[in-house]
Length: 191
Picture 1: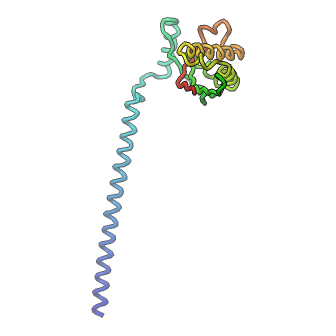
Picture 2 (picture 1 turned 60 degrees about the vertical axis):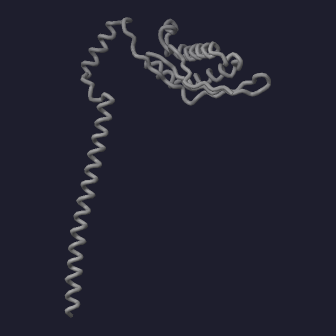
Picture 3 (picture 1 turned 30 degrees about the vertical axis):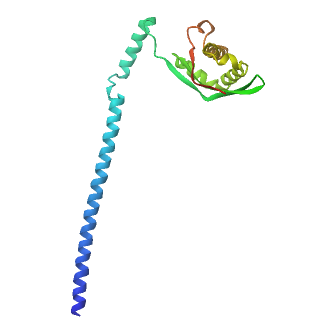
């Protein structure tokens, strides 16, 4: 029986040590999790700070006043340019000297009017159709030169502008001043 009492005392002491160790382990885990959460919050705050989220001092009333000042300034200041990528990339094939050739072009549109971007989004299937037909009708030899690519960008702008005018997004008399200003090739691969 004396042996049994010693065993009970030893298991009791081991149980107390294990309980104490478990509490210490939980505290360590809690501290590590708290430090990790704090570091994550600091990282998010620093990112927002460097992105300038906290620099905006304008209220909605201030924004309306700024818009009024911009309208009053008229043509003195240009509104910022807006860019809209026409995704996915255009891929067309055509024949040159008896061989099938391919063109892959990623195209972005530059405008200053958000209504134009909305119109492009709304009429994207029609615009993509016109651009694919335009590209597939081009000559491979002409597209190999910088002048040929610049001419293709102008033709693409005109094709998009025609769609916007025909759908009433851009007024015909404002087609040259408003609407699509430039078509930019962000990738142009021929093979």
